[in-house]
Length: 264
Image (cartoon, rainbow, N blue to C red; front, side):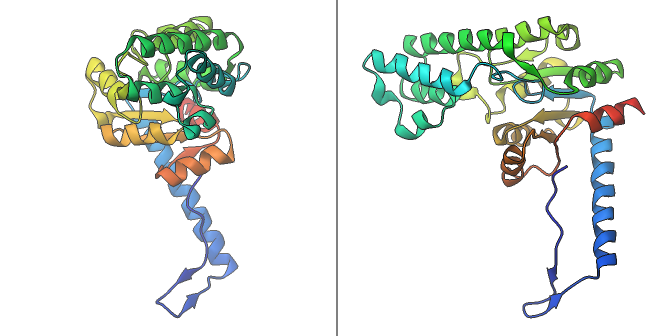
């Protein structure tokens, strides 16, 4: 669980207030208790759960490098004399979604963008065969659904890819038909809240009755704009730091605590 670290506090501009070891221990214990209680409340109050796909549900590119896919897209553009459509920064990001959005900003709605998006979708579909399920994700989804919550996927990946993965894991009944992924309106990718709003509208759910689980700052920003409470999932310290810097207050490093809450 990632929270702002406790430490010494300044009482006024010139006075350093140093707490005793006992007091520090009590403060940490209180902080953990409050955090656990807030997480429990979030999980139990959620009537609708909006899941990002690549991260909280699985590592889509665990065996099929996302950086390699981004490089292939850039190379495909270069072979057609379109190298200048992507800046050095965008090229070096090694993020296929960033490459796709960069081209769309310069040629919105074009056949070029449509073809590039289809190439990305095919690479994502290839990646599903080696995708690594996030630990405890399947059982958390199934348990939450059994307890009456409704599930939706809200992602920047292609909905075809999400369905292929969920079908393979026998998870589609937990979500169908509420899978909201990338459309031809690429400017509506997160951090735009478009896919979250589509899910909420289709499910007739108020933002405050939902909970989004995501692993990136764009997930958090989309949830905040849509008015949906957010729970961050960070599989490593780097992702936890990015979420904390974006403003996410509640971040877990494993889905196991959610399963414990749902079981009791």
